[in-house]
Length: 406
Image 1 (cartoon, rainbow, N blue to C red):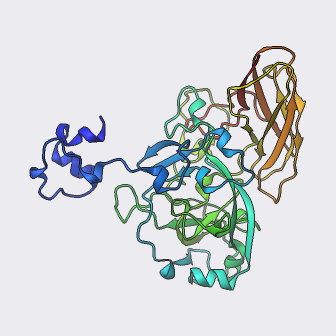
Image 2: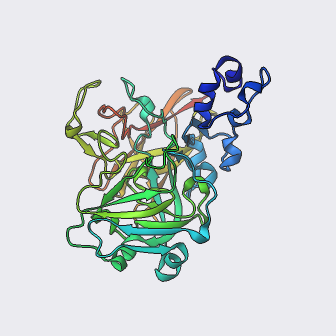
Image 3: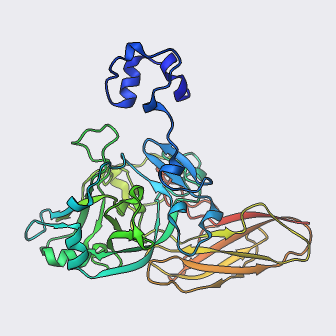
């Protein structure tokens, strides 16, 4: 049912539930009137996104790019995917923003203002690839619950901030520290202040890597609100859920962090392969850490048409979590044979790498161009869907575009 029919077809009690508030004078609402609070906002305008971006959910906001929008070497805001779990914070006062470090494994609880972070610690800039763990979920069969991401929940922006390890050293951490967990200012969808929409984290070894940042700039400007302004964690190469937005507290733990979406089956895959559709016990699920090898053809867009005898120039990006890409290959015969693309080295560790190739076709007809990346451990993408898992995570099948030669 469209929201604009709610007032006529839905009771006031249900409407109040949707808004999260009592509707004062609700009995006086004119027939067929649309409450402003129920009118659909324009996310493209709100978040400064390109109109070709695809909205998957509005409560909370989730939005992805299509492949050709990700052609930039550094992903601009207008093409960066949105993955939220709660409500975007409102009325942020950056002058009053603080971040507190606490937990069982800090020597002493400590709080910094944002300005103290910026001035007290060296600033660093890295291009860092972040990808939703569920990117590609829509291809799994049987279907997995959750946002049905296709290929566009990934990006590689330039992030500026301070190294988390520098701040942790200043705070002082005990020898028993094994994990950090983040806490943030976003609200649970229920608006219950006692519930966190998400509170994930990473092992202390990842927290202490040079590229793990408490970031306050994206592509040289203040991070857009929807992407974590004024301060966020960026853990490149790991599921984007570990890169918490609107961070205002870091807990240093002597156990694996047990915050919201760290327990149960969230952001976990079976420790051992299972049959499609199988039920897997929580204790048999393992936390996703480094993301798998993957690539994306960003030019041309699928459906390209070229004249017979002309070569097709393709380009795109490849990434492999904590690892580098060693090669990218393409196939025009559905994976029967492969030819190598030219591949650039990463700008810095955990940045995606750019590839390109010039492809000739033997005759007129329909073709598909497949891209397959191989990581520095020699692991290549599967040509089609990888092993099934209950939550639809880690689909790293080869990306494909359609081409017509005539």
